[in-house]
Length: 406
Image (cartoon, helix red, strand yellow):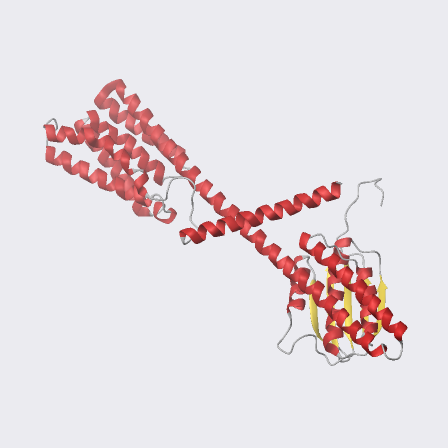
């Protein structure tokens, strides 16, 4: 029951990854491209409504309550222009960290201090606006230091013009700086996490497709080759030895049933090959194809994962021998050691291991499988003619607790 539950959980995880990737693909097709959908949109329009805090200063200018209204108007226009400039650059990391953005913030700070000292009153509200721009542009480990410095500056300037009322300006400036930075940083993190999750789901689906295609190629390619060879043998023997032909037909039925089982296991991802089983099947397939099998195996027992990988190599190499080599003899040697194991499949055929257009998908897939496990696969002409496939793998044995049964 525990094994069944584990398999069901794994299949459920694969299906969840598949459904998540398909949903993401469907949304991307509808929108034309994959977009970020978490947090505020990456645009400066998010910060523009806060400029309404400067309406009080604008009203003072029009009502004539401000001395030198032309200077005040020019200062208001300059501040708003710099604020818009910084706001729109704050949502692009490269622009946000550029020297021009830092310079614009410094000019804003000087302009805010000058307007506040000159006019006071509602002009002091430019400090919280400066805090918004600072929090949007200066995100990172130095934000706290800049936030406190700006709050102290606002408190001192507002205190000069408004006495103890400057404390509220200092508090508002610090709050606007830190809260703006926190919200925008959190929204960026959420978007990055969403993008990472979508990429992981897409990779999971791609890896599952690749595993499935490899398994089907390795399984069906070998099985169909054995069925064809045994069918030809049964046809040749039917006229002169009916019992031998029936034996071949029985083998075909057995191979077909075994293929159905293996395909089901490949679909669910729980096929674990055995090197001994694959060697027995290799002997049977080679004998049916009139190829003399020679199998030598030495060394200690191997871990299941290593045996499964070597089983894939035996299956693919023997399939190539039966289908392409025209050999009369095939040697399979397994030499295991304490740290590494070496498998060699050599035939005395024409030296062809696939189509005439280069290495097939079988050997390419096996090379990728073994490379993932830290091993290697080489294939080419043998030293005495024919074709040779050599696989080497590290032996990773599972450590057992002291006293645990072997």
